[in-house]
Image (tube, rainbow, N blue to C red; front, side, top):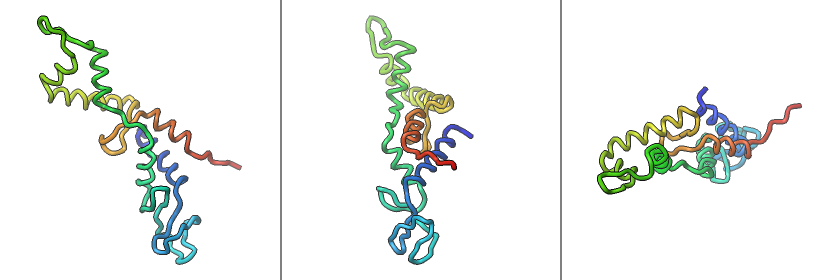
Length: 154
């Protein structure tokens, strides 16, 4: 199981803990998993953001509380660390990052994509929306640990 799948599983578990079954037909909570009024088990999930089928909206609400990685800034910082803050061209000292971006924007974009993919492979970063947003794995783990209710074993 990949780190992303493991974290998704834990976020889903947290979503079930932090939301309640809800019968939209009767517009009532159904904490037992079956509506007391109509008997339906075709229930939505209710949380502080409203009701919706499934738990994706609950998980999205969790992710809204976690800082998104600024990929372009992180990538630029790595380039500065590796190649230096400035590069000399003739008698001029220019920003290494700006020169690279200006001279070959396509290669810069490819480099940024490969950089974040490398962070994903090293389990440093994770995405839950196919690359729309990236999060530090440690931030997700910390959020889950702080919010997941421990199961009581008898």
